[in-house]
Image (tube, rainbow, N blue to C red; front, side, top):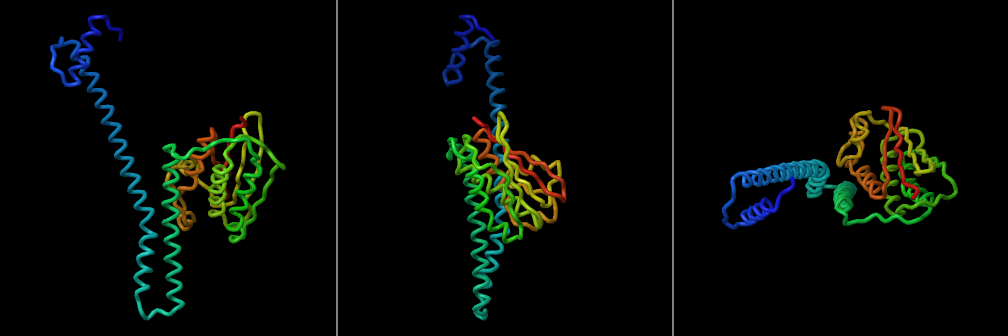
Length: 275
């Protein structure tokens, strides 16, 4: 709305009124200004309510994620108080305590990492570097876990491919995605391929795992979400790895999508800009 000099002067008086000064104001303009204030207050109230609900949901999710390892830790600490335990039993319970403590530590570290990425406290800096080298380093990090599960990682990569990316953070994103593929696969291979087009470079990480329902394709990248299925529920995880991976890629101008067939495996496709 365009105001004349007189109306602008009156509007300025109302601004002073809102600042705490007592002045006379024509009813029509006062009504308009108060309506604007009420609308702004209503918008702010909705935003605060959404923020409160988000915080409550986050706290509930964190509580749920910590409940199991904390209960297991508490139980084994109580068992350790039994003086009749053999040395072998005592070492077994101590080992389980260490395992649960590591889970809690990993969970808190991952949660802090997400928070820092989303708030900009950690920056992802792209440099011209060999993407193939980054991928191979990620494969080396997860290969012991794959071998432990009897899986092999097949890679179909060129000798080198230099594009702008953050080698450290991109490696972490790839490790999280590959780790996810290994966790939910029991037989077959994990396949990693690389393809460059005119606009973007695509990395496909394929597995032969339990698969994901189509209505969960977007959900699996949200914080704490774990896909449906008894096989998935029996597999340890927090639902944070893919969230971290997506945020790392997003900050580089990249993207990640998934395609899957329940019971036959999934393909996670990573897209990085060539420039």
